[in-house]
Length: 324
Image (tube, rainbow, N blue to C red; front, side, top):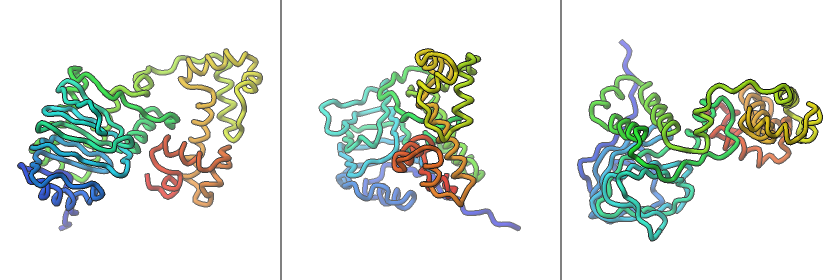
């Protein structure tokens, strides 16, 4: 008989532990992720459920006592908070937040401290920017050439946000443990459900693109411009020159791209070049990151790496190694 592989436990359950005991258990299960942050006071009690898998965490937590968590180093993830009790103060702000009907999206790259007061409790998720960007790119079928930004505050009375809370309740419920432990694929499926729920329900600068129906038929000059860019990804042709090639004014071509492509001429060119570069990195181990960047018109390799990271959620080097 074959033995079942040992599966990593992804759920931590706390029936009101001291912060020291909770911290020790958390580190044992998920690593010392917050080792550089000062510990809370010893009299703080932490209870609830916390789960984490592959760049996505979900939680239903409550805290007894007031304390501050500091972040000496920025974290490249977005935290989504659905408060149920108490208040939170971000970055020593004079304003505290904790209305049960107001959901919060916090970019941890901008976060230096959080203070929990009045026995704060919450449902929440934290998702790495890489996971969000990679999934968004997959859903839209193209690289993400602009940074993803979420609406910082939302009205939780909307059914869409009630759906997110229900999903967190499901993921943190004891009944779901049996399903998570039933197969090795379930944690990844839950991760995808959580990411998709946020991308679909929480407003962001790509929400309209996700809801947009199939593209309308573009006029001939827009099609010709697209075909030229696709056929010559290594060439950095200006909008003026491109308009001349397809015999229309620059303004008409710009308006055509905005309406039928949903982006600017420059952004579309960058999108195509990033797609070709991504394909080259996936399938050619003989070409270096620098070679690929230069091949597709990125003279500044450092800027290419940043564009690529923003578009796909991983670096060009990681893509080349297959770490995606």
